[in-house]
Length: 462
Image (cartoon, rainbow, N blue to C red; front, side, top):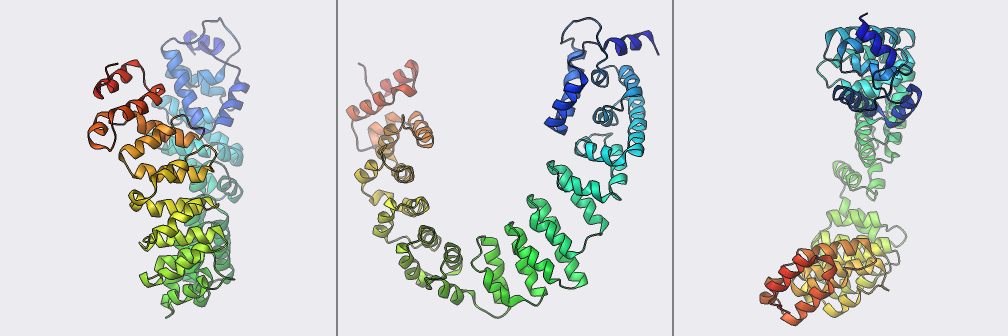
């Protein structure tokens, strides 16, 4: 070893903190933190940034990231405590460093394959995108394919790429039956993995025959996509008649699959929905939503009747359904719902009234902006006032520039700052004194220069 390299290994260059602290911090931060650490150390040492203290205890993690390839190669002789940095060096641009690192990583995988694979999988997956990153991933895959405990740990881990990679390897192994795959789909929080498990379960049932346990697991999943897969699987399981139970599912995707399955069996979903929404004991918000998704214009009265339902969720679904059917002509009924105690009802009513905002009572809406009014009423009123455009929108925005509601305040300030004051002077039903007063009330949003420009364009010379 040259004297140059021996000196760097002895002093650690301009090293940073003790290795134990670095390891704890980087391990807690995740795999990308190791890559960032490698890049930061190399940049700091290459351009001379850092402290200028004298020799200290060898900071091995720094040497493994050193910009000098000879130092990186020498540091790999005792790098077993830093498998993450060894994995990074396996994709190093320098062949000598790369080859030595691969020898070290290969030894780690032979002596402690489970721990090494579990520790390095998230990092190696990210490094695999590099030109020389495929080697470590291939060695890791050799360990993982026959190691279900480590695959299970990765499938349940917090790192999303590792979860998806482990799922793909598991599926390629073909060791799980349909119920096991359905159980994984039903409990998987990641939508991509859930889709993989669910599709694999249905493919297996298509080749090996239906499995009631697997279908029931899919139907009971939290994920709408998985439940929809379960509804579709009912047909192959000879249980198509159960599709009726899912017509009022909370997911529109599942409801659509249930309607399709009912139709495949020769049934008609619409009459079934009509029975649901007219039965006080069975009507739910999701039944109303499903009904609106396939109802005809002549079914409007059934939804109008639900505007007075005691359950706010049902009322909100009825208003949303009327909007979906383009049946919002009963302005009086929708306007009355603007003071409903249920926020979702008010929101849906305001959305339905947007095309008719010009026909609403402006003074009544402005009164709803009062600070003492419930937040959902104030937001709905502001939405409708802004839809009026012109001076009405400006008045509403100015009224809320100092509002206590962060959302209303932010929207109002954006509206005022972007307002074309000069255009309002010539096109809106207003006059110069009112615009001057509105500008004065919003003066806190502009600096002296901005205010001067706006006053000049309004012809306010004093």
